[in-house]
Image 1 (cartoon, rainbow, N blue to C red):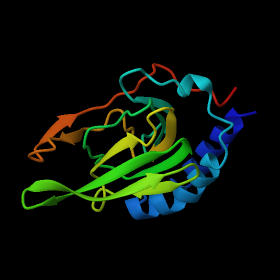
Image 2 (image 1 turned 60 degrees about the vertical axis):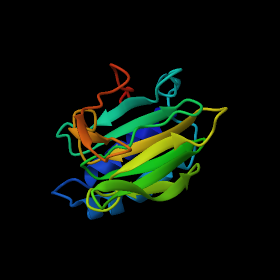
Image 3 (image 1 turned 180 degrees about the horizontal axis):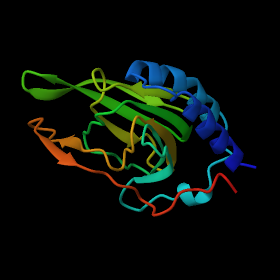
Image 4 (image 1 turned 180 degrees about the vertical axis):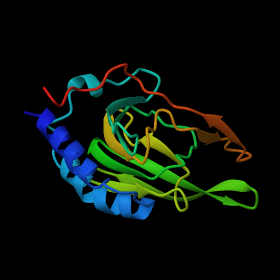
Length: 189
């Protein structure tokens, strides 16, 4: 029963939110749970694995009723990428299928400059913290296949006011991402 793995993750993650969690504690507690979830690629419903021919897809898999965290599948078509962006909340990225490259950016001399790349492969989990490595550009490492990553964020990421950044000037522009699907998987059936 593939949905049982996502249901177990949601239940275990929710147990950690009996009180407020700072970003470091939240990512530390949830990282091993996400690592367990992405250790096998046999549970994500195909409805949340569909690429778009032009744009990466952000499918909501679960949002905590109090919006303390959300779980999202990102589906990257061949060669697709994000703009340079931030999250303003903590996050975890777990690579489920394929591979993606995250290029971190840091403000320097009034501009944003690349500060290193991380390649995520299946089973890899990376943490994003608002005060450390929150600004990045993510791209599918493959030009001939779909890649899928599972993200956990410290809020309802589809409604969080965030920023994209001009690559030449570093100037921010506010945006709200929304989601690519009007429904979520029913893990409770």
